[in-house]
Length: 527
Image 1 (cartoon, rainbow, N blue to C red):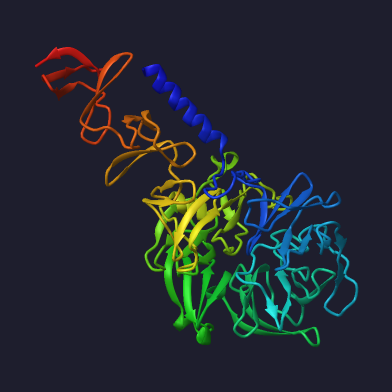
Image 2 (image 1 turned 180 degrees about the vertical axis):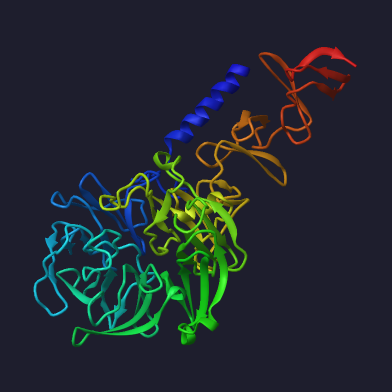
């Protein structure tokens, strides 16, 4: 009997290892990308993977990767932008490329601010971007890729090589729309972010890192004339930020100082420091603020400014009360105290937030290619927040995300509950995942959920994989309770819940009180 139980357990574990995804309505599917991943972009329902000199595109949230593009001439990617229709724009250190069909790619024509052909002054960091905008920049129906040049390299940072770029024609042309560190423009070490406010079609340019190099500039783009106008809006350490998120009449930003953190202000008075409200103070410089559609907030830290490991970030499920989260770091970075989340993408249509992993001690920022990467919402899910960054009161039914199937009701992931489909009944655990190889209780008793994720009504011994406890299932699909069952070793007693009493004790039968030994079997003696 013990051998039979051990064999059942091994088979259960083997099945769980071999099945990486489960669909309760269709045939099983497996995800193409493992964890940690080589994903480098995430927008809407699209993901881009970069491995082996090839870009791959998923348009179904990572279930399949239907398009791929070999890019043998491109040795590193410093910037990538995904258009709403799936077109892609990407850059290395000195060139920009685009593809409008995912069959071929072409080199973009790059122009200076005066319209002349641009040639690189530096071999590195001409197009490097540290932060992606929270929303798509669409002005009068035209989607514009806009980004600023980030560099910490001597001879690049703090020079007129720090520029803002844009493409109005899906990558065919890339143009400079602003140059820092000239006689007519402010001094800036580098560009932290360019964020878009869709309510009034304004662009918010943010720079750093010191008092004299930290600025906010407000820009507007005229689609008819293909021209820009920029206004120097605010200066100083109160405006050293790394991203902005506009929500209604308010704006939130990551205050990239120590102490820094998450700041909120009315859009109408965002330049007035007296109206700034510090919502949460991070131990290190705050490098990114993420705000979900339901108002939950995450504050991501960098290695700079404080002594806390930057893999630690803070999350407020209610937008007010922040809790400390120790983030997942891939094994090759596990012993590096400075490993941090970098290049955080906006929340995609599945509530996923992609972030790259970077270590100042291990990676050379000039040759770092934005991988490995993980999903920050997966970290929050593991920490007990299954609805992080999810759309409220929208999603319903079975939805595939984070490598598995989950059930939503009015936008909320269902947990600790039974749900059925055309094949049978399933149980969703405290994280919203399908229970497999587990004993689960309902109002009538213990049920066994098989390794396929469905309630099994086959009679026999079953083990609860998480707790290693045994029960004997009757033909009704429920565990026998207050009952004796024999196997090749002897008689076992099943307690009032239905679990095997696998320790010494006493149990009644029709003739009296039986003595159970340490191995969980009746000794043959009575009390």
